[in-house]
Image (cartoon, rainbow, N blue to C red):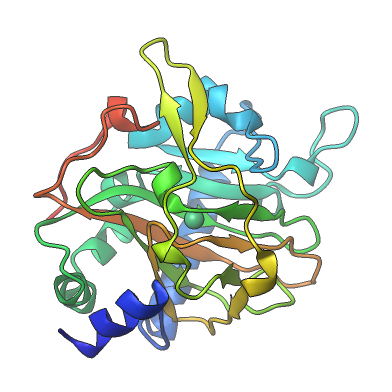
Length: 273
Ligand code: FE2
């Protein structure tokens, strides 16, 4: 067993500084701004993990194999107008940048990433989802505590998240927090898309997470944080002057079975490597 996989097995996460160089971080940030600039915000879809209001929004449901843009909850005034510039109002871009944007897709085949997936036992890797998250200054919203397997369920082995800090992520601007070893907790719930394209949650255990056990995963820019699909993790709101841009890939082994009732199963998505 590699030191990487031993640590991952123990904690349920890895924090790997300097995985991306500064130039790559800048390149991805610049590309995200180009995409936002070209986006016509006629459709105001808001991403909110507190009330899951986005979940039955067709713009969200159809984004599994597209590049769609989701606003911060606080980006609008009572007249439903943006209160600040578009590029400072976006919560996230998702969920198939890895498939449809050549700049982001180039990261799929990065040798160090492929090697790391191999060390973690992800054979024949398939990317099931990608997201670019802006965590905007002042209005960046909280992502409540969750397990990624709630949203992206794989039958044989939980999905693995690869979270790239493109800017410094610390306690002031809403870094990740996680419960070390919490991936040994059973899955608490699943988000399911039924045959009528309705989203609902099935709860197996409604005991709240003990947030006192959370530790901050401080990640200077270029750091890669790897997250086990059952690891409870979250990020607080960003009230600082600094954004916290990050890019994530959610990956499974192509030898395993992706649940057909996951939210994005309908539209998925070709193998990438
Ligand atoms: Fe997550």
